[in-house]
Length: 398
Image 1 (cartoon, rainbow, N blue to C red):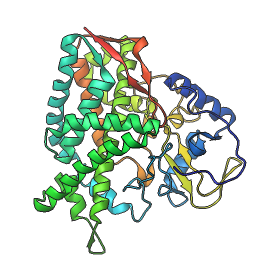
Image 2: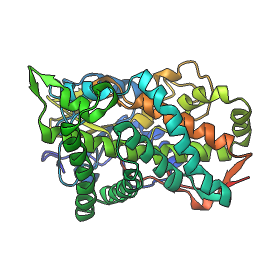
Image 3: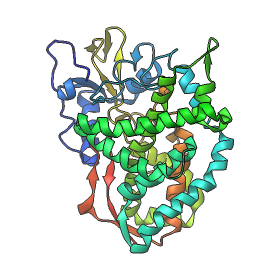
Image 4: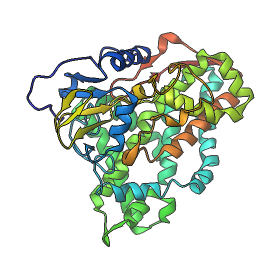
């Protein structure tokens, strides 16, 4: 884990004080007002930008705010660097280009009916028994099908990936190196096997991420094979960490707001607009990070190279200077497209189009397959740093 250079730094807030999303958002609201560039001594020390303007500016300035030193707080306890997230331009660019190539609209449209069938199959057992953990059951399993389908992995991989990724995430949050290593190696093996297969039997680059990475060239040379494995290994994790949390957050919001739940059920054409507002309200990360390439002063506070800075997109998305009545759900919010749920700049989430489709399918089928549902407040569990949102919640279906 990256440590803050030796100098006296304040402890403005405690990121582990609460995992309750309501309390975390209250903390960010206070910081935006009184300490918008805040420092914490937790996790080896890091800064947090909390206002929209500074977060957006930092995300767009990838020459000054670099990702190659620290990309998330807390960091992977092994300190590994994988493309494209952990590389800066221009080294990052060919990996990002290769992955983007496989996420075009035509391919996503072809994947949608396949993914919809998986969503129905994963929801049905919960609905038939009348209850289930929407985040830990459906929220973990359906995204595993999305990831394996996008990567063209064998169907038997999906259940294994769901279990492995869940175990890895829990260990990463608690910085349990041994469990992180064991589950990470399983995901690395999935990626290695995938690359080995595509070297022997390549597929069209526009339809297959591994083949696209293998086909990519930089000055006529192929990408490093181990870095390709790392990029696919990162894709496995990224596709599994955030979805259970945002699916859980959306489902709980709908369970608590029965009027909105019924409105979207009876008028499903409103669901895409609702998804954008849900993304603004429930951005699932508070720990995406950068470091500065040179000494930088932001709102009067000086940050040195090597000191991690989190870009708290969840805080930016509730900044009242940008979004009126920021804690309220407002469908068709005029400036909802300004939200930063997927980041900005070179490191904006490449899977954003697929994530939007996944969430739309999840909400459409959840509403279509039920006449109503509620959420037990006693079973709700908030996600730990670096994520934010509902990581566990029991729904009861009617």
